[in-house]
Length: 274
Ligand code: KMH
Ligand code: ZN
Image (cartoon, rainbow, N blue to C red; front, top):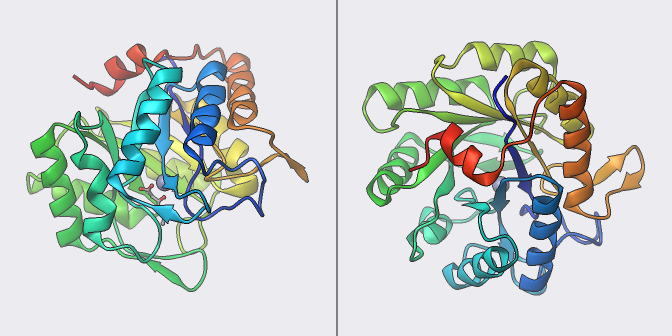
């Protein structure tokens, strides 16, 4: 089977130090968490940033400094800024990290609107998705298609047919957000069966669903995402000390299923990042 790409979502926008005191806010903390994940086997860092008080921001300068610190500690790692940002942000705010110089190699592209975690709405209209895709096409950025529901996969395929989303497509199936698709094997199989054969995919399970969903992905030849953005626990009631601890768990699953871990350069080849 193909080597396993591990993505570490080290920070997120919806969790805070109240959930786990190890959530990184400062640039040094971001660097430390990225390094722990990289040392454990992550080849992609999915990145949100905060101000020093912990408020999520998409500020370009904050991203630039954070990426510089990550690259100082992990020179070859792939940094994948979020363009989802935090709930309630404008499109212009969210897109700031793609305009860095140099442009990031990857970024997320969220593929639909949804109720998010209860009474909030995460807004990604068709025009928004097209605009984000065209900007990333122009800048040569590889998008990871974030799909929180089956309809978002259909939207990505539709926008591909219309010429906005380019192949090869790389999906991230996020299962278990309240308002999105449930985290069950049946749901994950449905998503996997819905994408073109020449696509790649990674799997994210929220909260207690993180490791069950990831292990299924590893078994089926998909890739895996873990990290504080999605889950702050190592096991029931036990907070993870670092993102690295969560990545180590993925490596254990990979060993059980005979999957070798991809280095960042191997991940670039698998995802066809040029
Ligand atoms: N913070 C969520 C509302 C992404 O990174 O592109 C959206 C999110 C997706 O985290
Ligand atoms: Zn994110």
